[in-house]
Image 1 (tube, rainbow over the protein chains, first blue to last red):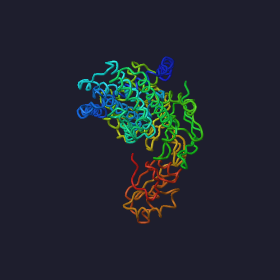
Image 2 (cartoon, rainbow over the protein chains, first blue to last red):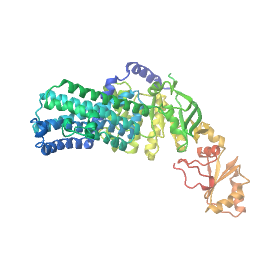
Image 3 (cartoon, chains in turn brown, yellow):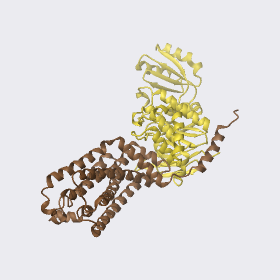
Image 4 (tube, rainbow over the protein chains, first blue to last red):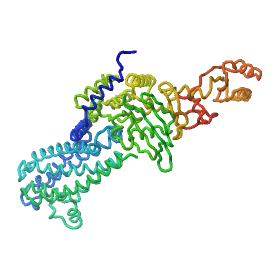
Length: 278
Length: 329
């Protein structure tokens, strides 16, 4: 007989740690999962670098091709100011897509199930990657703004306005993140998630993409007026070329809120379908 | 002492018309190693999924550590450690990161979680590889890391779903060693599914054999083997035709006789004493034998007895005559 009963000793130790260690705080769950998502994404930069470079590239092209032709519809204010928000929005969409991609990777590798077997909150499982998407998006938006500055961006509302523009992009990006997460959760398939994400991109073209909405006509005008992104773009553009126009800015915020409400409801349904025990 | 039992009461899992698990009941006592043995597709993983809260029983109930798997899923997750058959590890991450996050989800501080991670990495002999991405680990290393993840919160009950499938013999022995150690030093109840007869025999105090969703035998390995009978005589011949001739000659002698290509297996009450008689009968019939051995009954024999089919880990039941290759050891 040994003098120490290892089982009894362990029981005592365990009783101690169990009373001490409680649940992981909810916010910490989210930031921990977001941090992990970021680490993983930065280790595979292939998914985030190309959109970043493309975003800058398109900005240069738009300015070079349309910059001189824009005098007739912008009456003197600069085209780079007008087109910068579009570039930010496009890169925001690709940045936010990271959220869905992160989740679908975890589902495919089985790590998602591993997390489901821990006491972690189910909502944190989607909010973590969403936060990571938001961070990546902010970095991308900041990069586009930097390129824009080199091309002579000069917003009416100054640096604060630029930050507000990035803020709008983040709100739009978060809605898009909800959309990609929903597809990821419903499908559990990387191809479907990527494909589904592309469905969102036409929305950036069924809007006043290259010219102000006042110059649109016919079906494209109707489409643009129905598209919430139009109002978000208008708000961003007003910051660049007009100043702080309360009504336009609030309309933009409302459009963000509606979009976010829809996509997050969708992703919560996805979460429920994915985590409900079958 | 905490409740470390696993109880399944008439568990049923149906997918549409297909019944994957049919009225499975068993009780695993605290501190026991319970082997859940069956071929591929027999319903082992489906049962584990229900017991570990990933899957919902269609009917019936089960408890783990005294907690109901449906109504008290959170408590079950707290007392149970799980290593699933599909190793769910993010290939981009490093072992230390995975273990730290796992610890944190169970309420440890980052510091505690890191300390625990170091202990576990040491335990599963991965301390030297903490800076390597899990995607670059070998199959055996991944299994060991997965086991470490299941142990982060010092569970009372450990579920191992086919922990050695796809491992080389050396890694398999490492896992066996670890399972025994955890059971002996920590009194952990271990529920282990396997498709390897040898593994169940080696590790489990008690086993249940599951086939086509139903438990067909249950008990201690030795007791099950004893039920099948005593030793068997194995006789091999030059070819299958001769083996068949021999079968006709010997058929009256044995309680049961079984043919596997060139090998005859005879089950008799008193095998050792019957050897001269067998040889004599064969000589009288002018049949030449190649080898003759005595073997203890195996779980394979148990499986054959209860299902009428030879054990095949891939789940494709083979009739006795078509039996071809030997099972992987």
